[in-house]
Image 1: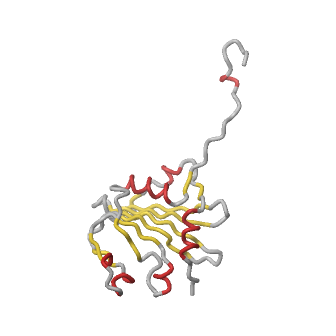
Image 2: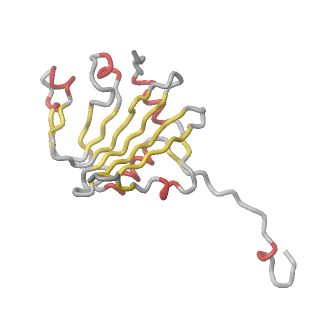
Image 3: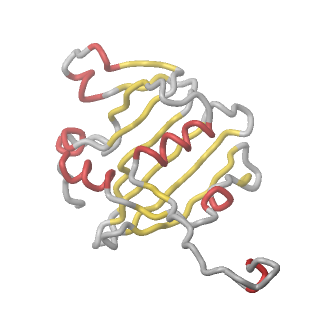
Length: 176
């Protein structure tokens, strides 16, 4: 049985810096799955602390507003934990089960952009780790969701290193 991640562990994992490759935009370009109306792409990356994470991107070719961007943490024992999901507008109703059981007002919503976040309380109650979701206005398309996803989950692209001038970078008179 997997361990329960605490809310503070989850926040730490989300904010931990994770380096994207220099060609991250092409690496994250979703591709059609064979015999499917969905596109898909995933790859692993490491954090500066040496932990392993996986990015998963899915899209619906029939409805471009139906997508999911997922950040998964792989624990040392090989267990995967979905930490966050930026979802598009899918037609089914979402139910926050913990909130529903307590008759809270944010238990249901339908067909809105939303963010799922892993919580300790959902794990303790036996629900999916990322079963809690909130409606968001931080994005309105796959591309703007990807931008918000990168900015809010510790992902970064390293700055290009400055190189010394090459032979053809010298002024015509040969003087620096």
